[in-house]
Amino acid sequence: MAVTVHWNGKDVPQELRALPEGRYVIESVDAAPALSPDEEAGLEQAIDSLRRGQGVQADAVFRRLDERLRR
Image 1 (cartoon, rainbow, N blue to C red):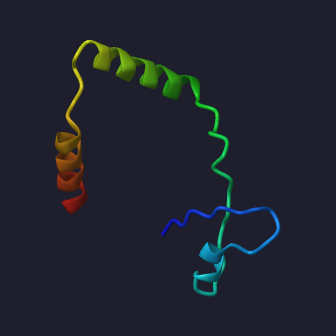
Image 2 (image 1 turned 30 degrees about the vertical axis):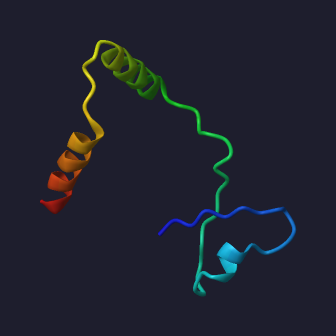
Image 3 (image 1 turned 180 degrees about the vertical axis):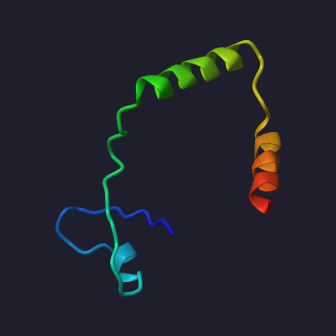
Protein backbone atom coordinates (compact mmCIF):
# COMPACT_ATOMS: atom_id res chain seq x y z
CA MET A 1 0.00 0.00 0.00
CA ALA A 2 1.41 3.40 -0.95
CA VAL A 3 0.32 6.62 0.70
CA THR A 4 1.34 10.02 -0.62
CA VAL A 5 2.13 12.42 2.21
CA HIS A 6 2.49 16.17 1.83
CA TRP A 7 4.54 17.38 4.78
CA ASN A 8 5.33 20.93 5.87
CA GLY A 9 8.43 19.77 7.76
CA LYS A 10 6.95 20.26 11.23
CA ASP A 11 3.47 18.89 11.82
CA VAL A 12 2.46 15.24 11.59
CA PRO A 13 0.42 14.95 8.36
CA GLN A 14 -3.13 13.63 8.42
CA GLU A 15 -2.11 10.87 5.98
CA LEU A 16 0.22 9.43 8.64
CA ARG A 17 -2.36 9.71 11.40
CA ALA A 18 -4.75 7.61 9.33
CA LEU A 19 -2.30 4.68 8.99
CA PRO A 20 -2.53 1.73 11.36
CA GLU A 21 0.20 1.23 13.95
CA GLY A 22 3.29 -0.44 12.52
CA ARG A 23 6.66 0.12 10.92
CA TYR A 24 6.89 2.19 7.76
CA VAL A 25 9.58 3.24 5.32
CA ILE A 26 9.33 6.81 4.12
CA GLU A 27 11.34 8.23 1.24
CA SER A 28 11.16 11.47 -0.65
CA VAL A 29 9.83 11.36 -4.20
CA ASP A 30 10.81 14.94 -5.00
CA ALA A 31 13.99 13.85 -6.76
CA ALA A 32 14.01 11.04 -9.30
CA PRO A 33 16.79 8.48 -8.92
CA ALA A 34 19.57 8.47 -11.51
CA LEU A 35 19.08 6.02 -14.37
CA SER A 36 21.63 3.39 -15.23
CA PRO A 37 23.13 3.53 -18.74
CA ASP A 38 20.95 0.55 -19.74
CA GLU A 39 17.80 2.25 -18.43
CA GLU A 40 18.70 5.47 -20.23
CA ALA A 41 19.30 3.58 -23.50
CA GLY A 42 16.00 1.72 -23.10
CA LEU A 43 14.09 4.96 -22.67
CA GLU A 44 15.80 6.46 -25.72
CA GLN A 45 14.81 3.38 -27.77
CA ALA A 46 11.24 3.64 -26.53
CA ILE A 47 11.03 7.34 -27.43
CA ASP A 48 12.44 6.64 -30.90
CA SER A 49 9.89 3.85 -31.36
CA LEU A 50 7.04 6.19 -30.42
CA ARG A 51 8.30 8.82 -32.83
CA ARG A 52 8.23 6.21 -35.61
CA GLY A 53 4.58 5.50 -34.78
CA GLN A 54 5.31 2.08 -33.29
CA GLY A 55 3.67 2.79 -29.94
CA VAL A 56 1.05 0.62 -28.25
CA GLN A 57 -2.29 2.00 -27.09
CA ALA A 58 -2.69 2.21 -23.30
CA ASP A 59 -5.70 -0.13 -23.25
CA ALA A 60 -3.63 -2.81 -25.01
CA VAL A 61 -0.84 -2.39 -22.46
CA PHE A 62 -3.27 -2.72 -19.54
CA ARG A 63 -4.87 -5.77 -21.16
CA ARG A 64 -1.45 -7.44 -21.52
CA LEU A 65 -0.57 -6.63 -17.91
CA ASP A 66 -3.89 -8.03 -16.67
CA GLU A 67 -3.30 -11.23 -18.64
CA ARG A 68 0.18 -11.70 -17.19
CA LEU A 69 -0.90 -10.92 -13.63
CA ARG A 70 -3.70 -13.51 -13.79
CA ARG A 71 -1.27 -16.33 -14.60
